[in-house]
Length: 563
Image (cartoon, rainbow, N blue to C red):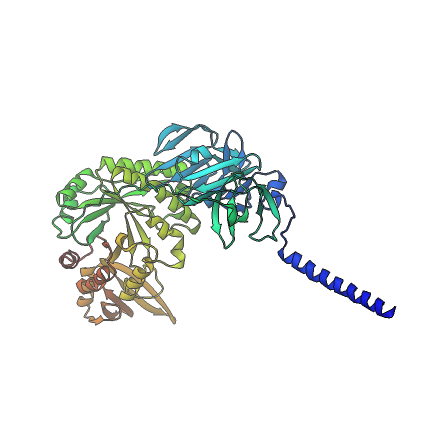
């Protein structure tokens, strides 16, 4: 009896052991049969919002798409996933889109929109819901290679970029389980019927990540898919660019500072017969007021004379170094448009070859408006066949807000002001443009701007520094001079002038009436030292500030070194 009881207990333990082992193996190899709702994988659906799937990625959005007569996408979604440069101006209620050759604007609740200022009609207007602008998909599809669909059964909006290749496949078996993850242990989202078409995004060993015709994303066994069809991407439209016709060799540009309607005779004489000069940039236009009007001292006769000498004319536009004025104009869409329309009229009226934008002292918070202004101006410049150039400081943390990289993508040339290393009110005496400063400015610039667009700034001026100690405190002040005048002053005062190889300049100093005078001279040799960087880094050329301060020998040097 005891033996029989022991045998029964042994069988019992064996059965328990087999049950434990069997349960372990069942858990390891049996699939998960748990069903989950798409609410668990599509953010927003549970709150009765429209879900959003970008290709194969369900995304949580601050503002969801809405569906009325068609799909409307919130501005924030468009900016993040379609066009990072789309611009919304709440002050005037307008959205602006810029492409390489178009500026598109639309206002809230207005069925008229504008392409390059030409009116067209919308099917559905831009809507403002609360403070959020919503853009109709039918409008966006005219300018961006996208597919947007609303799937009513699941309340999901899907967005695809048609410039990206895709793969499609068809389910070849019945009742295929779409799972949340690529494993049989993952819960089931839905069951797919034989013949269902799906988009394939990712191939793992035994699983495909797919999106269904209803916009639901998940994983299916790769054995469930038959033939895979490659969907070729839409071609990217490229705008043909006319080559810019300049003389052979590197570009040689000089800025010509003018303060009023100049005497034509003196203006002609100052720019006559300069060998190797390609471009004159007269300082003719400025922001006049906060309404976006421009001051204009341009002269058609000057342009005609310059062209008779073989030069192009790229008129300079400045902001008077006024950050408040700049903010008032650039932060407003209508005022930017006003400035652009004036510039286009001036290009035509004065037969200009180009425009040079010189906006300095732009406040940090206004950098984004400066970028928008340049993006809106560029398509019109291309349309008119005119050259667009821009002036930049050398890269530094305090100039990062100028968006050098993004602006350089839409302009033809960028002039880098590789001078004013020690500026007019510098607390310390020093060179205007030492070799190390110039080269570092170029090297840092080339991290953001292509070399074929970069014109290196050359200083045709120098500074004489005055240092005086008063009651133990050293005071420093300076004044800018032409190359020749600065040299003459030091020679007249018996200064010893020696070559400084570190700065690549001649240096001189003298004392008079308790004041020490110091100067790092700009002249032929210092300019020649700098010009070597144009060839070392294969830059587009040089831009000199300013006409009238240079020695005549500079033009012979540049003709020899650049042409």
